[in-house]
Image 1 (cartoon, rainbow, N blue to C red):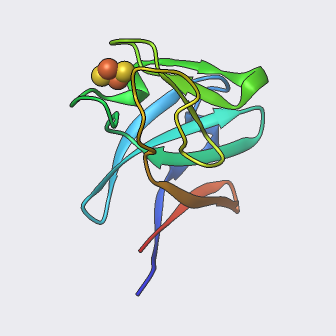
Image 2 (spheres, rainbow, N blue to C red; image 1 turned 120 degrees about the vertical axis):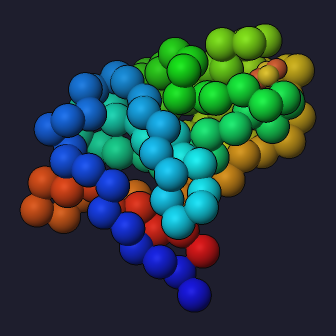
Length: 105
Ligand code: FES
């Protein structure tokens, strides 16, 4: 059963940055690009590294793992560059009354 969880205010997430949150047991990287918010699994699929500590690539809607440089689509979770070959999960994220809501399965 999907669970919608409020994880914080949009205003507290600086555009072009990411932040790690725990949502109902899932580690999620919240990413803001302009006024859009994305929610992607925080743990790199290549090794146990936090993607939210990497660089957000707003033009490409991707986030880059700081460890070995794989980039992941914020839309699909698919790695766009090696060495990662497996996707990370993506979650529905929306803004309601200025609050970020993430839906986890
Ligand atoms: S740990 Fe992320 S690319 Fe290697």
